[in-house]
Image (tube, rainbow, N blue to C red):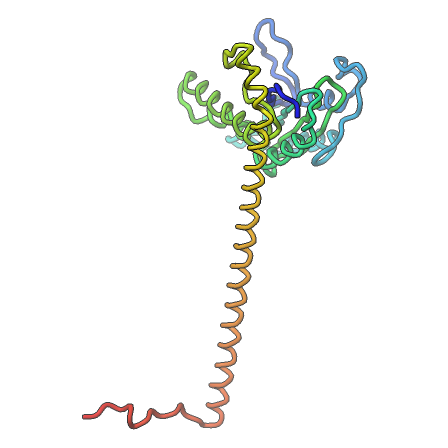
Length: 288
């Protein structure tokens, strides 16, 4: 297993048309078309890749189908006031997660990443593609909101900042939510795959300290993988027990209904034959 790798996952939101205003000196913000063109490896959109190869589809519809779907969602969606969505409304949440070059746990990491994305974004996760033509293999994932169009409520940082009052509180809420997002990725994906949550610079480690951390990553991964297996096994046993209990309850209800039907038939037959319930024995009567 590779040692010394650091996790990387990043998300952003995009609109069909980039905002007209940008910070002075800042590059033009990408739009949905730019993001999907780069991922599709369209010739003029991937000049940074010496030998581009088509993306590998791992989940959902193709990138072309996704782009058409986003256009349809934007056209039919409205904002909170009932007005049509602005052209610069955020209608795509896109992210990338990468794995260190040369690692032998890439297959495991990729499987865990897909599982985590489905847990994190649920039915809003639309498409996942894989690129293996750059220095580090990585996956791109795309999230949409078919019901409301705007995806900012699906972004953990923007969602947390929405309820804050002041700009300072908004920044704090945003940063706290994004750290929790990174923590969830490490717990489910990066940690069990032998990657560190933070690098030596962020933790202000010396070279010797970082070396010790790197050599401890395989043991960390083995422990976390075992914990996942135990948790998954426990969850499966719980599911089986719930299924058995539900099946037993249904069988009991069916048996009760059958007995009630039989009792009704017996009473109806007794009524037709003029039979009365058996009178109590004289020994059972109370004596004066």
